[in-house]
Amino acid sequence: MSPPLALDDPNASDAAWTAVQRPVFTGGNQVQLLRGGDMLFPAMVDAISKATSEVWLATYIFNNDPGGDSVARALAEAAQRGVQVRVVLDGFGCKASLPQLSPGLVSAGVQLTIFRPLKRWWNWLQPGQLRRLHQKLCVVDGRVGFVGGINLLDDHLDLKHGWTDAPRLDFAVHFTGPAVQAVEQTISAVWARAQLGRHFKQEVKFITREGHPLANAKRLIRRLRMTQNLELAGPPSTLEPMHAAFVLRDNVRQRRTIERSYIEAIRRSHSRVDLISAYFYPGREFRRALADAAGRGVKVRLLLQGKLDYLMAGLAARALYDELLGHGVRIYEYTPAFLHAKVGLVDDDWATVGSSNIDPLSLLLNLEANIVVRDKNFAAELASEFDRAVAASTEIDPSQTYRPGVVGALRRGLVAWCAHVYLRLAGATGKY
Image (tube, rainbow, N blue to C red; front, side, top):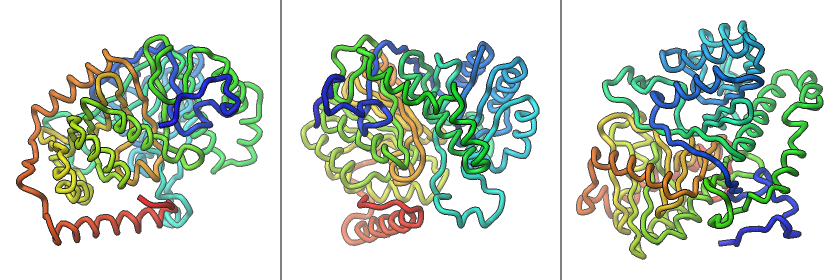
């Protein structure tokens, strides 16, 4: 693994979080783990209700239900009292809810824009439509940030299967500190990108105006470079607690940042690797890292869906069971409710929470965002949540392999071919 770059290193001329493909850690953050919308939505509403200058929000799904409505009301009320509120929603994820959601927000003064809207069937023929905005981000007054995998959707509602008795398993974080700057810059860039697609000439004038976050991006990067409380990659050792890095997957400079963050952490592991992913079909390098870790005695556990929301996604994950079980990886299926979480824990001081699944859509196509935290107390809290979820799950018996031999190879080959075709149609290149 490459060593951390020093800020005065001549090779670090582009050493800002937007310019490198490795995590940029800052110290002095305070990060709180949130389980489900029942914890996230009240925290977001409280922060937005106290906003004095601006609110940025980006999400894949913003639904019309009690959970989503509480956030929508808070956004509208903030805009009505003069706070600058900008919201960017994915055109596919919010297609069904926009007719009811949009009028209330816009009439209140919220600046709402849609990332790759799908108003007509021929929109699907436009390049890049399979690449969606899958991030779940919010920043209030540049001080308070939210990152995670939780859509603005009630914990007991699945858009495909309806209302459920048990809440969906999902996580997010509420945090303050220097890492918030990176989240705000990301949302503002995505928001402006969506606007550029609709009103190019108007938006060019807007984003070049003094004071706009994109116009100030270079100054933000310079401030990050000058900050002593910052390191690139590697285990932070000189930073003030808590150490955190905001990592994203885009289609420009950080195509593989999240995936590499996972792989490098797994390669360094010495005691445990615990992963939760709603949709799981990693590439060969990722699978090799898991197998190698298990082979050197690391306890490697995967928590995946047992109650499937999309059958094909579940079948794709199960096509890898015999390979992973054969290398000593332990696999659990979560059955009490739908599983939507995307978190990772390595040893006792590396943890990540975010929107990125460990599958081709998240790792190679969609816009995704995670936060990586290097803190033993935070890792211990996440480990407790993982162990609690595993205790309610069913472990896959390694003696009962999933389609071994020729049948298993054919099944894996079919899944790999389907993934390859989909990625090609979406414009992704390279081996997976």
